[in-house]
Length: 151
Image 1 (cartoon, rainbow, N blue to C red):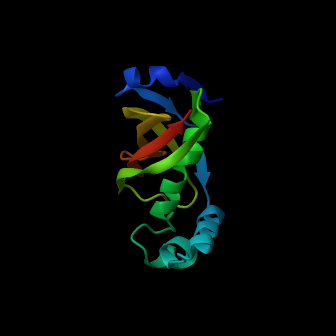
Image 2: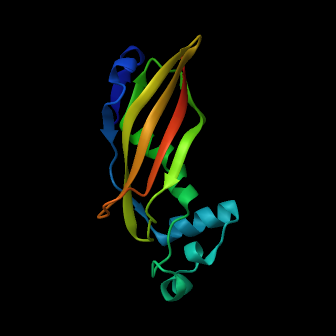
Image 3: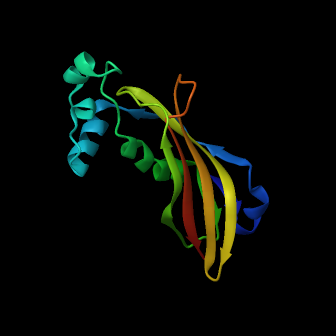
C-alpha cells in the first residue's frame, strides 16, 4: 500500500527519505521481453549461454534502461500524492548505472524528495531515486527524476 503525502507537505520533506518499495524479481524473461520491445537484443542481455561463457559478469544482465524504466512502477507501489489529478514524467536530471543487475536478481526502489517547485497548475517534484540490488554494496542505478504533478 502506497504512503500518502499531501502536496502542501512536500516542500518540507525535501532531503528526507519517503519510501522504500518491495523487492522486484528481474528474471531472464523480463530482460528478453524488454530487449524485444526496444530492439536491443545484445547478447550480454538476451543470450544467457553466451553471457555465461563470455561476459565479465558470467551471466546475462538487465539493460540499464530496463532498470531505469522500472522506477515509475516502484514509485507507484510506494508513494501517493493526495490531491494530484495526475503525475507526468517531466524528465531526468542525472542517471548513473552503477552496478549491473544480473538475471535472477531482485531490485527495490528507495525514494527521497530532492526539491519541489510550484507551478500555476501543480508542482515539479524532483525525486532522488536509488534502485538497490539485493546483496550488493552499491546501487544498481541512481537517478534524479522530475515528476510534474498536476492538480
